Image 1 (tube, rainbow, N blue to C red):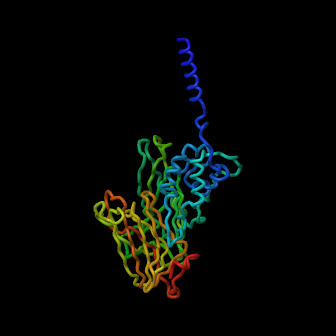
Image 2: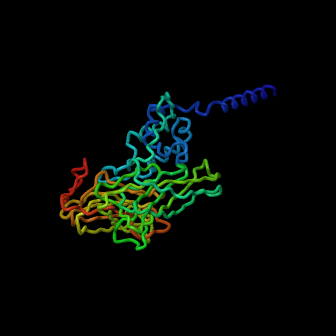
Image 3: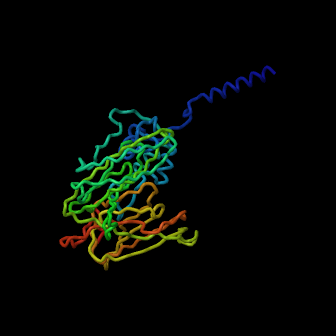
Length: 405
C-alpha cells in the first residue's frame, strides 16, 4: 500500500510539473523568419493604418507580444484572402491602392505563424509610422461634423448629416477626404451631393467612399465632381466599437476636407455596368456550382476615358468581371474582383484608360452562394469623362502594352 501511495504521489508530482511548464516549451521553431527582422516590416507597411493601438481594427499588431496570440486568426484571414480587405485585379495588374500581399509577404507571414513565431532581436525605430494628417496636403476647406455619441449599450450605429456649403465652397471638387475624431470608432463614410432638382442625367453625385486605411485619390487635372449652387453635402457615417470598448460610451467628431477643382473642370459621369440577377437561379443550375449570374453589354456612343469604378450594394458577395471589346479588336479584362460587405470603396485605375467610340463593355456577375435579399439595379459604377478631341488615340496603361489596343 505504501508503494502504491508513493507511486501515486510521484505521478501527481510529474503531472503538476509538466502542467507548470511554459506553454510553448514543446512548440518547435521551424520558421527561418523572425518577427523583428521579417514580420514587423510587413505589418508596419501593410497593416499599421488599422492595426495599431487606438485604431479601427480589433487588435494592434505592432509588437511580438501583441501579434503572437492572434497567429491562428492571421493564418485563417490570409488563407481566405480577407486581408487586405479590398484587393482587386485590373487588366492583369493591380489597381491604385488595391494591392494584395505579394507572394513573398504571404510566405513570410504564414511561415512565421505556423513555424513557432520566433521573436528575433527587437531593433529601435521599428514602430508604426504615423501618416500625415491629410495625405493629399492641406485642404482648400474643412467642415466639422456634429458630435456623435454611441451609448454604452450600442455596438454599431449609422448617422446621416446634411452640410450646407457657403458660396466659396460651391464649386467643382477634385477630392474629398475624412479625418475621424475617434479612429477606433469610425468604420466607413459615404459623401454625396443632394440637390433640390435631384439627379441630373449621369452626373456623378457620389463624392467619396471612405474606409480606414484607404488612401484618398484626387481626380486628374481638368476633371471634377459637380457641385451645383443648391448643393447639400450628405455625409453618412457608420460607427462600430472594437471589442475593447464594447461597454463604453464613446464620442466622435470627424472632419471633412474639400479639395477644389478648376471652375471649368469637366464633370465626372456615373456609368452603370451590369445588373444584379434577381432572383438568382436555383442552386446547382449554373455552371461550376454558380447559383446566380447575369451577363450584359453595351457599346460606347462616344469616346470615353475611364477613371475609376466602385461597387454598389447589389454587388456584395458577387464575383464581377468587366471586359472591354474595341470595335474590331480583341476582348481585354478591365476589372475582376469580389466586393466585401462593409468595405465599399472607389477603385482608381493606375492611369486613366481611353476607350474609342464603339467599344463594348461586357459585364459578368456571379454569386457562389444565393444572396439572402438580392438587390436590383447596377452592381458597379464606372466614373468617366468624355475624351477630348485631341485624345482620340486610346491611352495605354504604363507597363501593360500588350493588354490594351
